[in-house]
Image (cartoon, rainbow, N blue to C red; front, top):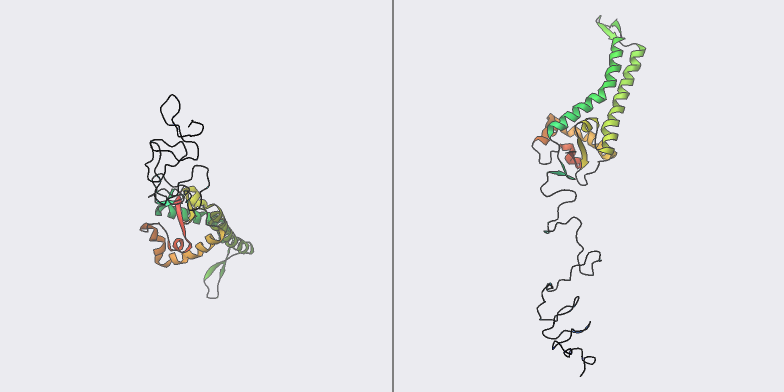
Amino acid sequence: MSNDQNPYAPSQGTGQPAAPQYGQVPQYGQAPQYGQVPPYGQEPQYGQQAPQYGAPAAPQYGEAPQQGQQAPQYGASAYGAQPAHGRAPGWPGVGGRALASWPYRVGASLIDGVVSSIVPALCYGIAAGTSETTVDAFGTPTSTPTALGTVLILVGIVAQFAIWFWNRVWRQGRTGQSVGKSLLNIRLVKEATGGPAGIGLTFGREFAHILDAFFYIGYLWPLWDEKKQTFADKLCGTVVTRD
């Protein structure tokens, strides 16, 4: 039988069996061509990877996984470890940023307090300087603000609330940083996402600081807490990180 009729007959002049055609099972002693799987029971040749029993082959780069295959996870390391989203293994922070220590948080709060009180302090000072000295019903000398002083006191109250809301709620909720946090390079973020907390949650967190005010325990809690959170942070799911 000629080689054209029998593909497994030895080729002329070589004494070697011809390579099997695509789709044919190779005979004993023949190496399968690229892309062919060795028959059941045969060991794979050099350069071929033995498939695991019952495990589908992993998809190649750019190929969609077949049914029963698991797509590789984004950010999975080559050794099988899958770090948390945006956080290196063992990194004590959120989104790749370390947690802010207690002195930084206290310093930022003090700066924010000064920012909120500058304009009101000027208004109250002018009101006190322009007040009139009178005598009350008991004959005790007292100071009474003039009409201008009364207006300035009201302006000071409104200004203090407006500056506080802009700095501690609006600015901090949208960017994660009040003026004080910006100067000290720290940021308020959601623990789950590492992004800004938002205006609504930040506004609620300001009122949740009432829990921290009881004997100042909540304000001191970051000194020993693993996540350096106050009670308000734990209630709202927020942390303060370093930039």
